[in-house]
Image 1 (tube, rainbow, N blue to C red):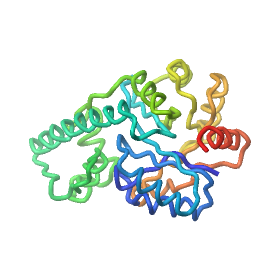
Image 2 (tube, rainbow, N blue to C red):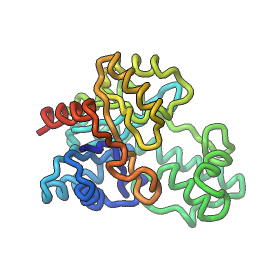
Image 3 (cartoon, rainbow, N blue to C red):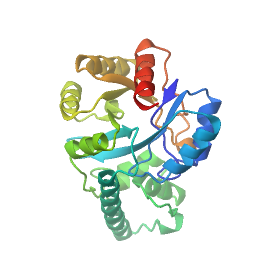
Image 4 (spheres, rainbow, N blue to C red):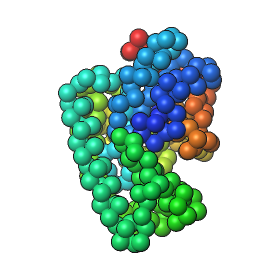
Length: 271
């Protein structure tokens, strides 16, 4: 039983890396990865906690890449000291900081000051801005915040610069990692078959077909597309702690042979 898509307080989750490890053990996971957005800062803490309880752990990261729709790629089994990977993370930090500066300015021009409600993590995401808009009464929930203020097409939207999928996959592989397309069922503006074919050509090895919130039809479709393209089928909760209670750690796991095969593949590759 595995979960290789989770987020901690080092991006937009509410649990520390060590707390996530303890939750992973509590639900019976036998393989776990931390994949914070564009950040490796939580990996040492998670790795130490996992070693202490004997839980197989993979260092990971969720990286956005440029595509016709929002494309997130999971890299797991990473060497976090790889220089190309560290350079990519530094560049993403720079681009995100610039995006956040411009986003803040646009909100201020709308008469909205979110600074009093923004936390001060080392990685400030749009999710934090959405939460601030809700807390200050400008939006009724996260969906409303994105729809009316900071989402694509909204008045304060700022598109962040992103590397190409080729660059992201190449760096993941250079760092000894395995690249997996994250939650493809959320990519509504592109053709699913074309998406998976494109990613397979670039060297992505897995498809996150089992995902909290996916319908049975979506899971079957993306599992089938993975098999057609010679890719393995993966699962991930996309756990964010209290920010996403409907996606608990381990919540995407299904007791099926294709996921058991994937777990065996990853265990053999990294342990």
